Image (cartoon, rainbow, N blue to C red; front, side, top):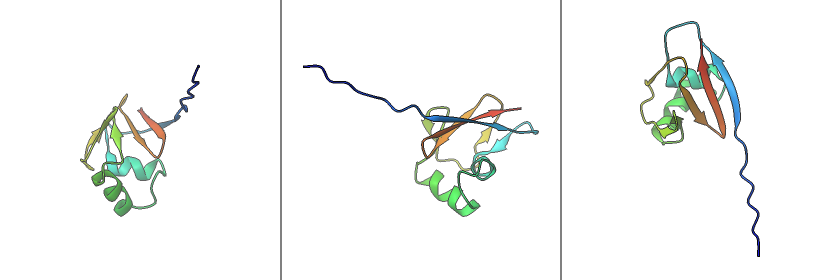
Length: 80
């Protein structure tokens, strides 16, 4: 008996910044992944956000070019 498994592809979006870095909570708002800073704080502290593939609990984490963060089934790639 063969079992077929389909792994859903995650959506990827580019997040273009003009600065050297962007804080994780600001990036979530800038990408329209959350509607407010309070919501950004909550989702980060609840462990719902991954940075470069690992759960991140630091809402002030600095993201730089080539970093990525994941929330809500979407991967956001930071580019300059």
